[in-house]
Length: 146
Image (tube, rainbow, N blue to C red; front, side):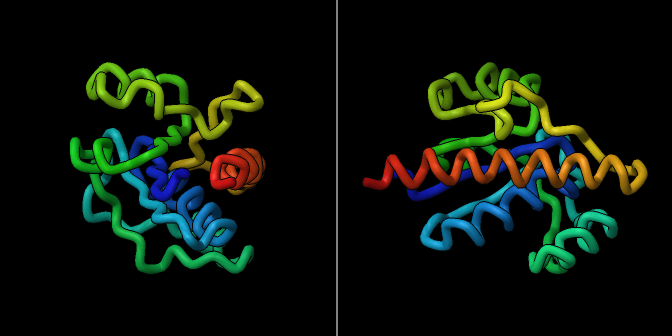
């Protein structure tokens, strides 16, 4: 049974925080966290991400970006990265994590587009990709729980 999931992106101000709150809403019994491979440590979530999350009933107002750590990787039972490059970086940096690191878009073989400092259309696309990825992984995690 999976009890903890770590969402990983680059800056930890757009994609992984959004994925975290989406999955947490779908599976409230899980411990879901997020971090960035090159996090903008101490920064709040991107204002447009906060707005779009709010429109979906999700709250990112208290999010503060954090950097990915050994402890994060060790403690997570499942790690979902936004891109294949991030997946490979995690697996290379933390070899013990191989086998529990996947892309959020694994089922569709896609990377989640990075909307940071881009227009709303990029955010809309990223949110749609994240929602789809979270839906796919929610089903996988739910099956593993039984």
